[in-house]
Image 1 (cartoon, rainbow, N blue to C red):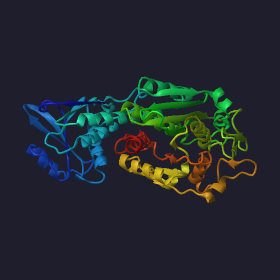
Image 2: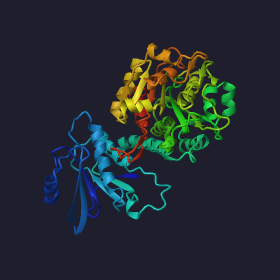
Image 3: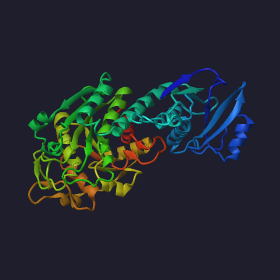
Length: 487
């Protein structure tokens, strides 16, 4: 969707025209039919509310919309403004209108607040209809352009930053939405090249033989049942001070997860195309950082595999040796994400000696049982890093909730024949998964694990997304970089 800033008066022939309205504060100059209609329909400017009217202007019938932005100065002001923009798009996305104008004339929105409105408008307009060949005409998205009139000084520059973030989120949604016969390790890498080449991001890729030479027995054990070759995708952005240690984002990229020999039930297995949501978030975050020229050194690493059952697949009871030299008894082949992450994290630490490691993964169903679809879980060995990520989550809308860790949980994954087993008991499943990953974090390295299993896919439309891929993870990483790594 195109966002265009225009100067001069809003044309009377532009249809529709939308106004962003603070709570209990209708804009001055509205036609009586609009103002009285809003009051009659109990429109009060609450966040996400929308009222539409039709008026005659200069001989043309014009659709006028009022979108509620909530109370000025509220702690959730940015989110409320995003909801206002999203409400406008949701109303007109398949309305038959190709363009609309958001008229900000006379409003008191700051440049940053305008950018929030536009971010919500653009994100809510993302759809992926590539495979829907018989979609009825009235259900097809028609809205292509949003024009912005009467914007305050600096709004266009503020939007340029948020537009980069939107592009990253949309890239993540694309990767997560694509079916597993389209996105698998090799094609994930191809998409990364398509979107990141020319942005300043340096891409490297390790193949099966290179990972075998490094001793990545855990990651390769997951991949050995599939005909799809595994990949380790490495994306480097050096926008900060020369020689400064990078912060590492590491993503679980299981492009399809059958569970392997520990086969999942058939019902709902099609959803496992999004088991690469952590890697998708890392790739999207790297695109956002590059597009807005973030002044920080960041590396994104994605462990990309497909977990399939066949005659060569890993078996329950197998013992694998990880790149770190530690051994793992594989009790459940459906606990594969941690096996991918442990080798990816080990390699990242050896290659970059990062200032901090943040991994993202759709790791456990237990996380959904704990937090539903409202928060991602965060586990960490460092209170300062955890608090910064929690703050970034609250500021960005990608909310996180901290979970406990400790020796009592850690001992639950001890194995009688190897250094550890890849699952503990049923209780505390998300915690023991995090304890497993922590065993591969080098002493003194701040680390956080984000279990986002309940957040990357939505069964119904949300505030700034339609049903399907949400793009969760990109915003919290981007906000973390803005607030803590850039000056």
